[in-house]
Image 1 (cartoon, rainbow, N blue to C red):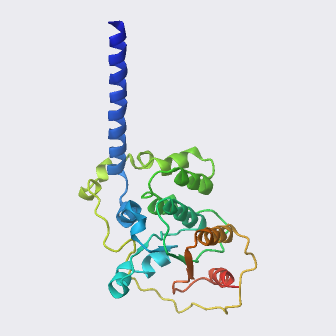
Image 2: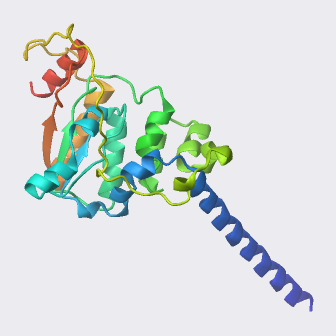
Image 3: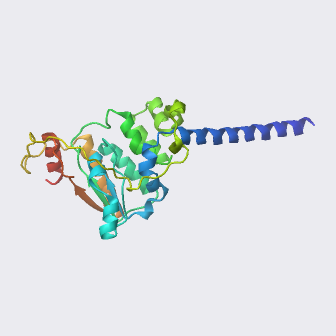
Length: 254
């Protein structure tokens, strides 16, 4: 009958859309650049596994090795710092993680706190930190907050297929089965630089403007930790920093 035909057509259309969705999302997973997944997917699988979260820039990423902390002291930690992070990105990464769990402690790298802009000029850097974060309303709020109402950029960060769909010819074996890195998010670097021109300023030499975007999001992280009774430890990973950054980090404790 006509009624049965319409029902069959409706069921067929629904089945087709379901199959199309499965193929789309599976293709997105395969095509996605695996840098973020390799570093952070293990954390996002279950953040509650870790008592301490390390957050910040690449200095934290390379400077703290969770596996050493576990071996020497038995602490279960994860390093979710990301390259070239600015405070807005760190804040929204933190808020996304809090949807799953609350750590006993957050160790926050305060490098770049003096910066007065929302993000690094390389979208690839933000992808490294953001791609592995599961899709959620909080993640969407974060992308909108960091990039504004740019529909292309919003789609790029919320739908990986949008930016990675041209990677067909680059696919390798690890694209089909991502193996988590062994370092709980951290990385290793054995490069040597000449820092003979480095000059350390006095601790009382602080930046005058503490109302930058960086400082505002830094305070938001502090307030969130206080509201949830999470212990917050501020740190400056040893490095030869430019004087403006030194002044910003000095202002954190002033």
